[in-house]
Image 1 (cartoon, one colour):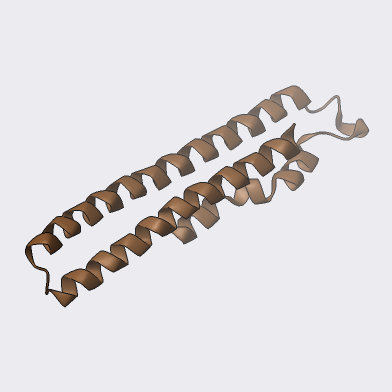
Image 2 (cartoon, rainbow, N blue to C red; image 1 turned 90 degrees about the vertical axis):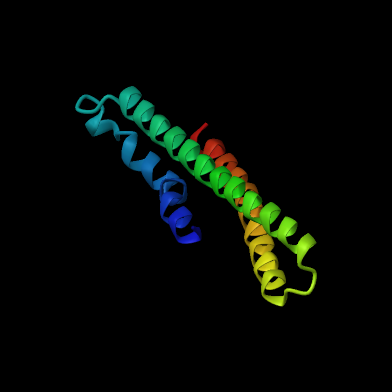
Length: 116
């Protein structure tokens, strides 16, 4: 999922470049509608942020359900080392997804500051 998020964050990583290529120079003002191109950039950014947040929250939800299920199984089988290992792995994955949500907030804030 981290690779997918990295690819999906390309628009945020290149926001300055996108703005520089979106807003026309004086010689191109008559050929390009800067209002429309800025609106399209804004909408693309909004869509990207919404999609990434939805994906991350979906992963958190699914992983939380797996962790809950594994904890319930562990209550029944205290000595199962493989189960404990799987539980730890899923808990680590859940923490990673929760930290990705925090990273997403920082990335989004940075992009909006550049855009405004």
